[in-house]
Image (cartoon, rainbow, N blue to C red; front, side, top):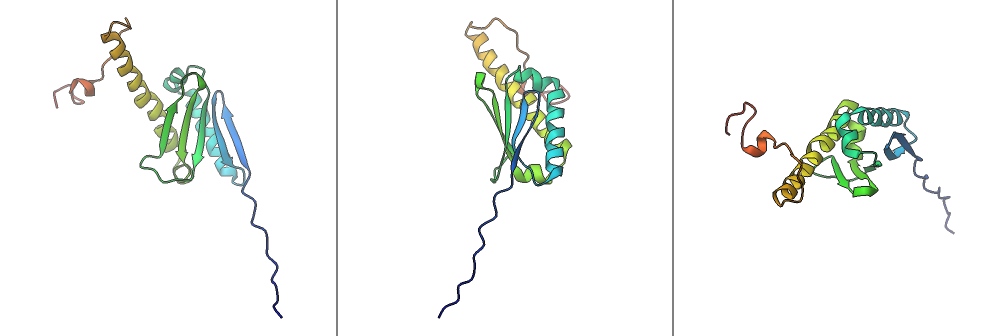
Length: 151
């Protein structure tokens, strides 16, 4: 005669919360950790207050989703045009790094990488005669170092 042991059902996943400020929002912050909610709240406040970020978003929605994955970079930003901007952020980076590091890294992604891509696209349009705008060219693209001297 075998004795059966009662099995306990698996624990439900932790509740996920949306944390938003303006048009920027985290979509899935674990509700079981108040410090994560506070961290996400402060990060979206900082991003919303960053002029270059808000200029880049131009009123479009920006969703930040925490992903449990290992990537070479802690974040991946996808510009979906009029649909908005989506950021996949490594949850381990969110959980282990400070607010300043995360906000700084995300600001860098928006203000540097995305703006440079837009500038290059504008340069290509201008070269083809399709865009009369003047886009600045960074020193790095001209082959100059920080001091302005050639590399």
